[in-house]
Amino acid sequence: MPLYVIERSFADQLDLTGEDVRTIESVNADEGVRWVFSFLTADKRKTYCLYEAPSADAIVAAARRANVPADVVVEVDQIYADTAV
View 1 (cartoon, rainbow, N blue to C red):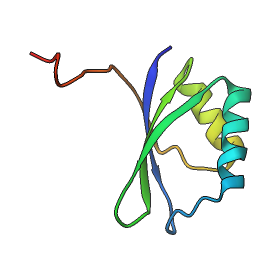
View 2: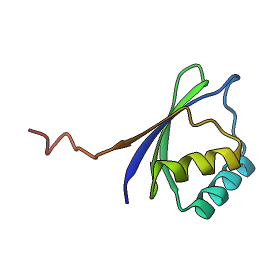
View 3: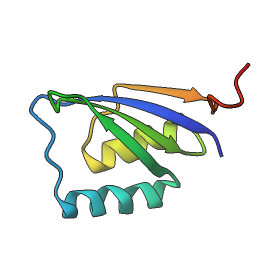
View 4: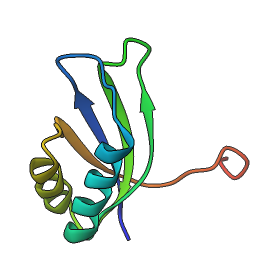
């Protein structure tokens, strides 16, 4: 399945509860996308998330339903440092 990096900007510091995460995961499952992991900036106002999804449109649909931003969605390929030449 294709991989995507999503950049999300938040007006306030991000503070997700366990319930928030469960809601996001449920919506993602409905849209056929899977949240792999995220990086949170030091000011807690921006995240960079790695997702598996059938398309960028599925990620945007899930973000809208979960009421979270998806400012930039970019399809990416995976490269490992130990195999890069």
